[in-house]
Image (cartoon, rainbow, N blue to C red; front, top):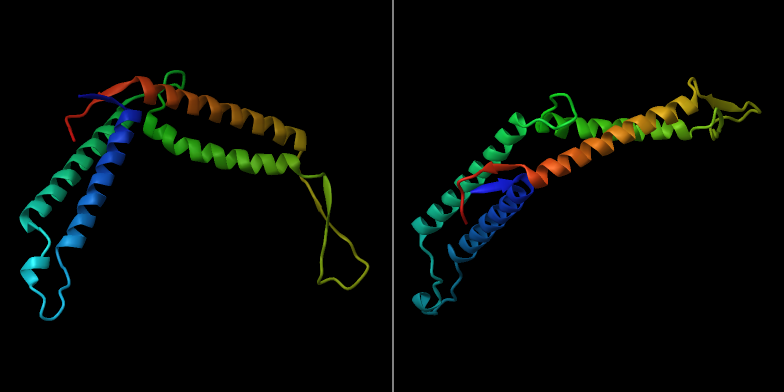
Length: 171
């Protein structure tokens, strides 16, 4: 069956939830409490060890297959307009761009000279922090990084919702 990355993400979430449900069911039914003198067989929950293990193994194998298909797709699929940049590279690049934009935004917002409040100083000396760069240049660089980050995210969104991959997993 063909899935887009967005659909594969939903399938991954379904499989993870199914695994949690199976683990929870096993946890609740693999052991139980009975009071002294109570008929143990009357309160014993239904539980099949082999069936529970097989179910979880099957779900986890499907999850591995889906995640592997997504990884292969991400490694082999390039983003249009980004000169050979693969999806997996873009997924690494985006957080780097976010961090760079955050730093540049702080740099652009700084005053050329700011007074530093010091509670340790008991004299009449006043300390200042002085920027060693042009704040306008930092703002321009921030805009470039922000625009690149936005266009990269949009390219990823388009690919995630339009390009498909073959995944042979059913729920």
